[in-house]
Length: 107
Image 1 (tube, helix red, strand yellow):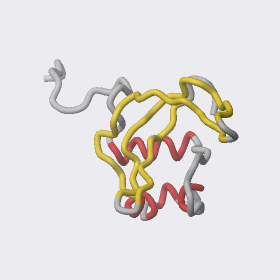
Image 2 (cartoon, rainbow, N blue to C red):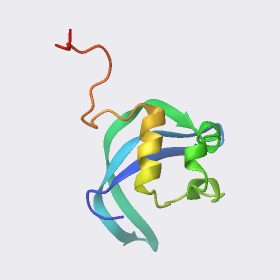
Image 3 (cartoon, rainbow, N blue to C red):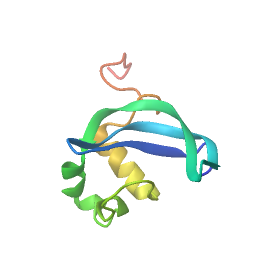
C-alpha cells in the first residue's frame, strides 16, 4: 500500500461482511509494538454497501482474493475488480461522479 492509494473499507464482523466505503493511504506501513500499521483517511461511503454474498455471486468478480482469505487484512485489488465493485455499489461519495437527478441541459 503506497501513499495516496485508494482502498476499499471492508467491514469484516461476523454479522456484517461488506464493502462500505473508500479510504486513501495517509501513511505507508510502519511498525507499532511489533505490529505493522497503515494509516488511512476516509474518502467516502459507498452509495450502496455491498455484502460479501452479493460480491461472491457476481461473475465479474470470480477469483477475487477477498473470497479466498478466511481472515482478511489486506488483499490486492486489480483495476478491473475496483471498477466492478464501484459499478455494483454505485461508486462512493467523493469519487467525482454525480448521482441522481442533476440539472441536465439535454432536453
